[in-house]
Length: 534
Ligand code: FAD
Ligand code: SIN
Image 1 (cartoon, helix red, strand yellow):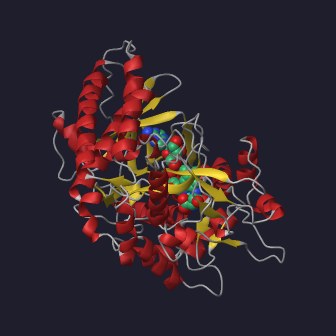
Image 2: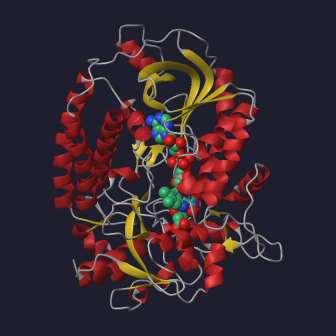
């Protein structure tokens, strides 16, 4: 008999944990399946903070306007308004769960500024906002009665009524999710789970790129799984490259240097020491991210440089240490003292604006399957996400999804009953690990070289050919050997890379984060200036 829960949550970042807390508080039995330890997530590394309207001088319509402007005409305005209006309530909830947002000396909450925001509206816990949120939520889960947390369990495949039908049993009227298979990575055994509903909260896909700010967990598993189950996925071409990751020539690690540092006055300079953002946008260093990342890319191509500089020298030693202790310590460990040296920075893959399509109840196109957080695409971000809107979206949509799942479970009673068990391929472990490693590298390099900040149709087509070959290889390989975590991740990365490329080739325009030189006539003047240099 499979293990049975009312709700299975895949992922333990801000989205999964917030949802699990709400659903368990409503009395449902919940399992959280997470592939590493609970805290390991993109959430844990978030620096700048969480955007919400909490000050008297701000209002939700201004936040809406900034979000729409950053999204470059592709946001769903209704979704933007609905999600952002819940901002301050969600912040209050996080505070109740134990998040201690930074305050000014007079006791008012400290509000940061980032690119594209017309107001200071970013609540933060110094420069370790994600860690503080993650810890508070993990602590709350630990004392929650209705939740089992299964660490080191890797969700492999969704089980749907249609899939079972294909194996010879009666096909029910509607396709719906029945549960999932998950690999216990410490024992190497795939277990079967039955559930009334499943939430996909597996986060982003940064690891498909050679250089990314994302930790190793970000391999797009949830999107790949949902897509294989026939669930709608959209806007995958909109990959956000963060403008400022620490450049290191000896390593592919890309530690983030938060945009909040520019919010406090840091400026970008090219290798000649010249500030350059004024040439690209009147908001200069605090323009939306797509513009700043393209401008840096352009300056680097023009001068043949491997990085640009971020100049923090005017901010002041005390403020740097108080506000950015984590960034300060990292830079110091790399021999950079922020009060007197400049930081070498480059853009790196950071965030996926697209994903599993959901409505405003976090419902996907498959009955009983919910998605929220970075894995989901609600319409909030459009063609480019406004800074610090991601953590906010995750909490708001987790709460909305949790209310909806309660109603779904009332109408769709699910009970403990059998499901087909997982059938492994050959029980042998593969002796071709080295091929697997090469394929990982090839995916990451292909995406970086051909599906980056500035694209062309020809390069996208070249990328498609390479990824298709890898896809054929992995599918053959996958079925021949016993599955393990790296094989499953590689398979998912290849699927997701293919989706990014397909969506990119289908969008026959340049918009937001999807900058294609073939459609340059549709770009604005600043980008036109840039493209002459490519
Ligand atoms: P995650 O927090 O990534 O959690 C995903 C979870 O799913 C993890 O627990 C993972 O282990 C698990 N998982 C994945 N696949 C599987 C599988 N197959 N089986 C089981 N478990 C699985 N956004 C902001 O709004 N403000 C910021 O300041 C900010 N700073 C950032 C800084 C950095 C360095 C990075 C990388 C991102 C930042 N972002 C920021 C983006 C934001 O952190 C993420 O978009 C957000 O945290 C995503 O939350 P999530 O819960 O959807 O996913
Ligand atoms: C940052 O701190 O610059 C990251 C913020 C974000 O990704 O929203």
